[in-house]
Image (tube, rainbow, N blue to C red; front, side):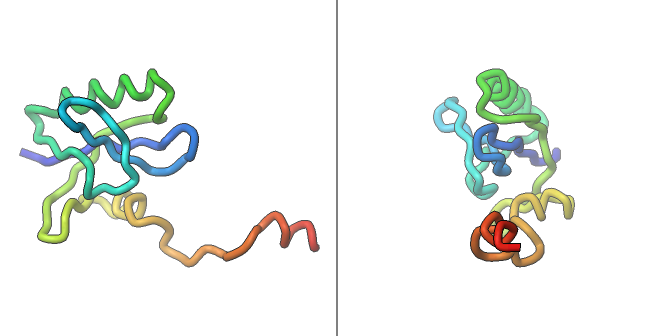
Length: 104
């Protein structure tokens, strides 16, 4: 059976987030290693919690992704989701972009 976690974007911050259940109570973390991993049989519990979080305006567009377990933790199976979990693939400019635009 495939292992999966639920991911979404946090509504206020816009950050990638992963669903974690603690004693059945949902919370969202930006660390994929803290996500609750489920197999196909228990995925409905995660889906319900994710949908409720969307209705409560905590996250936007939750969906399940396939993952696998390594000795270093959870890893998404697709490159797209690996990038979402790890962050940008290039170094972002430092400083305030607005200031540099105003100076021009």
